[in-house]
Length: 235
Ligand code: SAM
Image (tube, rainbow, N blue to C red; front, top):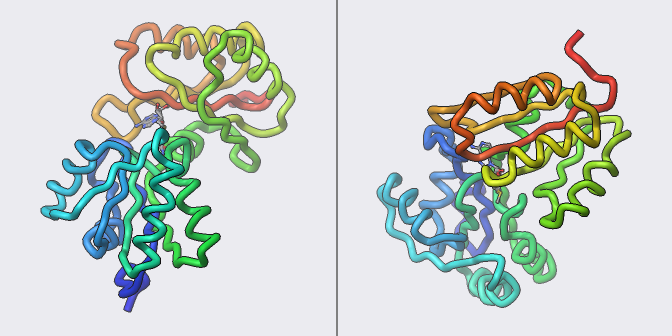
């Protein structure tokens, strides 16, 4: 019996596509199918995935706002023998998405945890960036306040590897300009947009060149930025 067909209570941490449904692995589909409950962020988003898989499984909403309370409840379900699949709207749960508290609760109660690896925007962007991968830091989203944004970018100035961050379409222009101002217009970066989707674009080069190329696109979509170490270039 594979671990995905676990008979007693367990938590599956299931990675789902970041755009392309073809990226849902067989193991991911099997673990969802074998679950009694799906804990997910937005039940409407996950309902579409379940429809694609032709499955009907009860869903519970597990979001940032109710994570603390729900973690206890879901852990109790697992303790009572239920198999629960934890899903994000897209990508890997827990990575800049809810999940960490539930996983911690399962560890504290010595419950079985089965990770099902798969799509993740940060690692996909890093792998495609052409920037160094031997050492990297993932910093999630930049802080909301402008002063904090500058401080954060500044603090990674001399890091000897690549820095991976998420950004929204509303702030992408501002963030690229801030990187150029603080780290220099020749700093190498990668701007990965709409990864795995029809309008995927992966722009790598000095930040001023990427800004120029990006200004010719619609500016819509989901973005991941990779910043290379100081002095790095493709030569
Ligand atoms: N847990 C997810 C993962 O494993 O990638 C990340 C969730 S985080 C809330 C969502 C952010 O990831 C988006 O705002 C965007 O910055 C990045 N992202 C998600 N999908 C992407 C894609 N297809 N292309 C580029 N970036 C993406």
